[in-house]
Image (tube, rainbow, N blue to C red; front, side, top):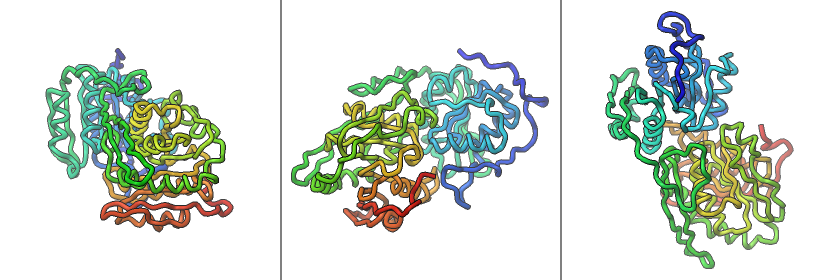
Length: 463
């Protein structure tokens, strides 16, 4: 078990922490979307920092989870704390933390980054958490803290009051015998959990099992789905979907994904008709190299490039991997890269790929909008872009993925997109990719097909 220092050699008097007020306005969200109405911190970050500063616990016994752009971590290191352990789900957040630390001259050795595993929480006495959006993600975090931190650990989770529910207290109470809500301040509130319960044994993995992790996460859902295609020549697709707690929609099919799956017969029929011209290129280890993926905070040893004749497909923003797996099952010669910026999504997609016996056909990478993939490397892109940035409704994340798709698809290749019908993504697709036609539409979702026009010199190159 990790032993925490009794004091912090880098801290100074008055409880061991510097007293100056941290200037959060210096922080940036980059490479995530930046806009006048989006900032890199909120009042919850400040409350969590204030709690840690008064707790009198050394930095090497503090773990920080969900620090979106580094506000909590960098404010604490600025106060003199060293040895803080940090977990961020999104690769954009990991890069923003590194960028902010470098730009502000923070000590690069004052914190270390981790996946959600035992190395993050072993010996931790104080765990600071920005409450995640989903209850499943909170359950996973609480389980991990109760399982791996010290018996004396205090978990302090905070969020904006408008996004908090009493059910979050109930989730924490499954893993801690004491859960105390604090008084709301500046429209944020903290929940303080202590006295962890004995954690249950982790559930059995899906069959066939996912690749063994060094320290596997305890929470994993699996659901088998059947997508019934009615078009001639297309049989139903049956596959198992796996999800860790932080993955969007869990092991269920979100309705946007289902809408694109329902359009797959039309997509497949079109490519069968074009069989003489599609898929002639040899795939050369398509996907990010192991070193690149590891640099994004992902386990590089799990990257397995695929080399075969066939259609080159990218599932951009893959989530739990439903689109990639369903397409692979219908197209045995396709070589597919599934990529997402969420570590929870990538873990889930890898488990989904393994559960369906497709490890040799689908490469899963942790990346920001396919930034490590080469220009023009796909014949086809499947895209289900988000319309939220954290808790904010904002089209910026979707637009970034549309621009990435325009860069990644070859001239003449196609981008099949599903999006909320009220969004103006069709115009954005036409502008960034090329001619775009509607394939299907419901009051909630629209599916489109965009054909990549010939590139103008300098257009859509990686920045």
